[in-house]
Length: 490
Image (cartoon, rainbow, N blue to C red; front, side, top):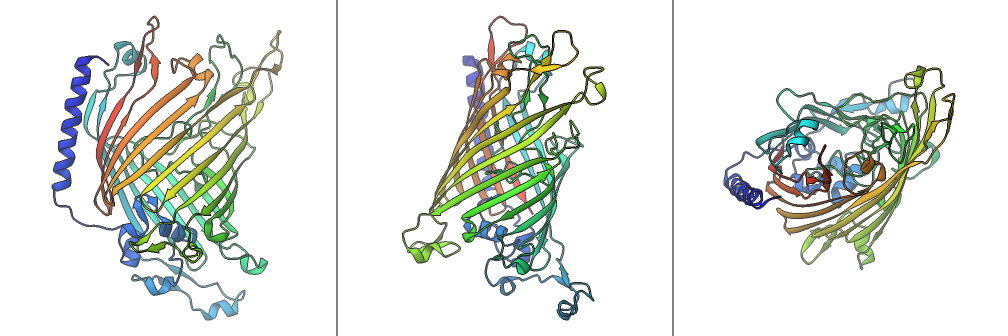
């Protein structure tokens, strides 16, 4: 970035800072989403920096969207009862009674001012022109419906009605129903230790991307495996797997949360959709994939009695526990290509196994500081045509690895600083011209301000990796980006 561009960026950053100050001083109408309306409580009951959950919010989620203790005593907007309790005694000769929540609807909107680094003409010609600034770019407008359906059922549906521009297509996010303590009564399994979820949902990732506090995605979650499509690079082959770990999946999941959620396991069997939220599938197949996530947490509070509480309490009042957890996860699937000879006429369908596996950690010090990170390794089987093009032979696998580390610090309960590092090592991406080096690094500092419990101002600057300029001789540029905007729920 040249001197003049740096000065221009500085002026824009200052202007954005003034804009934030004006927005923070402006009066706002207070509004609360569905769960807050049901219990007549503030968003901060379950969130330190929404949509991130605090200890109470996590316990609320694990308990099927209900308070972990004495839920009926706290409900201020009671549901409509569907049947009488006496019907339980008559079952199976009557329908098991249920309940219908009263309008469990919430909305979320976000829009951002964006400043992009100056774009070289060759990049604009190859991939399309990107304006250097946009004053208030809409991100998403989302409708969310979620609630408990009696003591052991819950549901969640969220749909992006519009995304990234006026009239742009949105898409279904999560849409599932979940039975908590599935068959637990008959199998004598403790509460919430055996649950089943069915529908479309984000995988049980160590850290969510669908409901992240960040303005940009985790790069490793969106990483895919593709060899050089021309076959002329040092890694030719058949692998063209568009699967991304962040893609919404359709399937069934079993899970359990023993020991107050400090032990956590989930196993899902899914279709293996190769699409991100809001886009059509890029591939279809008959086989099913499997995803497994295991975590173990350790409460680091010194007082044993405090460890048993939903949230810790001390001289300064209620706060989150100090704890650390470790994850291990793996996704195991098969990518199908050349169906009906669409790529290689006369040759059979290719079924290439692949996996994504890794580990993660999360350390939280009360409600003031959190540090988390993740590492993932991807491996796809790869083949090439034999010498006379009558079949396939094994080739060098397509692999990548990487992850992220992020820190979050609460200067005040309403002022939160963020710092994130993303790294992806993919020789295949370098071969395909996506980056200068095998490893792509992104540094993303950010600042978030809770103007009200349900209104948040956000900023993030992404210092990106070097990318080749098409048609140039060893010339590169960085697609750096600054974003600042508002995010609110009601």
